[in-house]
Length: 592
Image (cartoon, rainbow, N blue to C red; front, side):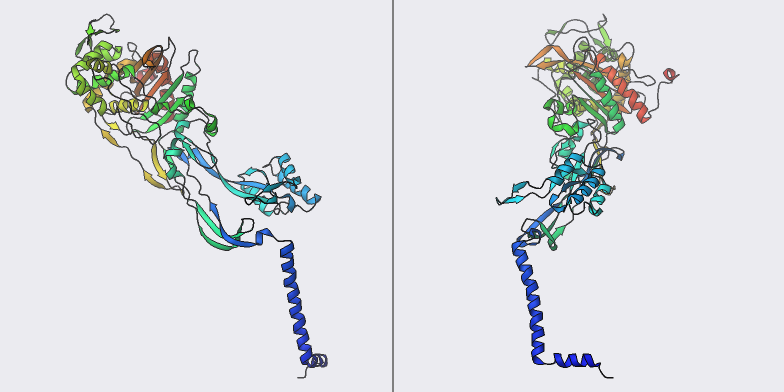
């Protein structure tokens, strides 16, 4: 087969040595011209994002902070973190007026950004800034807001009108959907996820996770060249906290305290604790005044104070319960033992009392009528050593170990004198916290077992599985089961018509509890105007489920007595909790 004549002639022509040299030289010259043009362009008009400089840039990949949830898990969030995008516009990437109008319509029409802010960003072309090396540079990106809407993020990435002129940087934001509810327990983290209070701070190591990173060669502007990686590590999200708190019960407590603070004669402060007396789990804990978690930075130290664990105070007559329990447990008295409550000197001092004109009261009557003289007799029978031993067995004088900052220990003894000993049996000359009192009453309610208070039920992994459980834990037996049952029965009379806590009655339920009223100490002296009124009790008394404590601070007269200021709040909380938790009534006559 012969080659066509034109191609044959072309081949003979190209075979000439001079022609081949000329073609190769021309090709090399052309390639050299292209390279030269690229080099000149790079020198005169460099693209800073493509210039490699010595060094490596490392981008931190944030880990999502674990959530804080009530006992029902992710259905009831108290604190959660969500990914968002910070969006900025580069007006220099908008070539003309038509493109600017299209970008504006797209961004403003998304509904995620302020229209005026979008417009100002699109027309801002003359701003400059000074970089870290002191060089004046043109500002390219102008922020227009944040969005957590995935549809908006996809729009920015795919819409031709905005995909080249917008930049979205991922960020993680912490939200507190319950507002002020359980604010003292949840706490707060700031915009850089620095924990400042509450569980956010004490459990930060559990919640924060481990950030990752992506390293790459750096550009002249400090950016990363994705095509030249230098190593990476994926972030590990933080674990979740599953609390013992029941959000519905917590909200009921919040409402009850809010109502107490709006009375005609409101207290200066108030707090309440709801505890499952069988397990030690804290179902609700709240203090007033309080604060909005999202506005933590503008709250005052007084609003930030978690009074349920930090305020130590003389409890008053609620401590008479433990004097009776100690004396019965030691075999010194029975509920029917008569106590001398006649006027006279007690450790050399007169003692005022309300004995209804009687000179003798049974131990049961001493609790029902809250007799100071009767409690003093029990203190003298016990003596300092035995009374101190029983108080410590009930958990007084030491912290409960809740995972919160600011818990106080209180003290079980003052100057150690005999006078101090009988005052302690009346709830004076010693101090305690609300959580100590509630936990000690739970021991009476459950048959004599002191349970460790629980605030965190479990730690959960990011995938929703449980990492660690914290089951109920018995930490001691301060009294026998028989003693606890006898004292619980005596406390039922306190809420009867003849007792000091008639207002703590809950329709359909038997209630056992005790009132306490104590003068506040100011500047080392007892105040003549400010008091703390307390009621702490449990129900249903026939099969106790919940222990509830309420304290009102600086209550003005005539609402100083715990049976007047605190008992009605207890009754409202108990009724709401019984409905929420579906606790069956145990007083059928009243139900009918």
